[in-house]
Image 1 (cartoon, protein in one colour):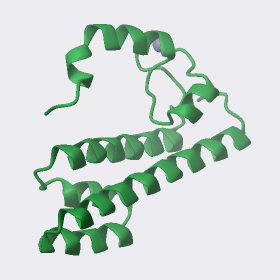
Image 2 (image 1 turned 180 degrees about the horizontal axis):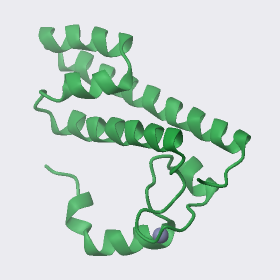
Image 3 (image 1 turned 30 degrees about the vertical axis):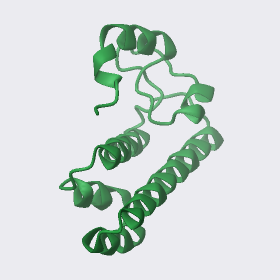
Amino acid sequence: MSKFTKTQKADLARALEHRGQQLRDDVRTMLLQSGDEHYTQLAGRVHDRGDESVADMLNDLNSTLIDRHIHELREIDAARLRMVDGTIGRCISCDGEIGHPRLMAYPMAVRCIHCQEQFDKTHHHEITPRL
Ligand SMILES: [Zn+2]
């Protein structure tokens, strides 16, 4: 169980919600801008539905740009689950505490800043955007 206060958890939940909303809006804008009728219809549905189903719904779309948003929506879902089971704020690499300021800046963080730096060094190719 993380040692965050109720207020800190509420802040985190809000940050996650806000980020999810932002992503859905972005995806919707991208779909609308594509000018494709099918995508325009999808855009309407993105607006109405929750994050989980949005990620699933968009999974079939062959778009690198949207792909990255889907990835992030899934990370948000995972972070919400960690909120529920109380493991949010715990580094998956060293089991140490992820600071609240770091989580507020990046609510989906699963590693403390030190482990993330190590991870990025060794997995750099994985965080490079696909073209
Ligand atoms: Zn760590």
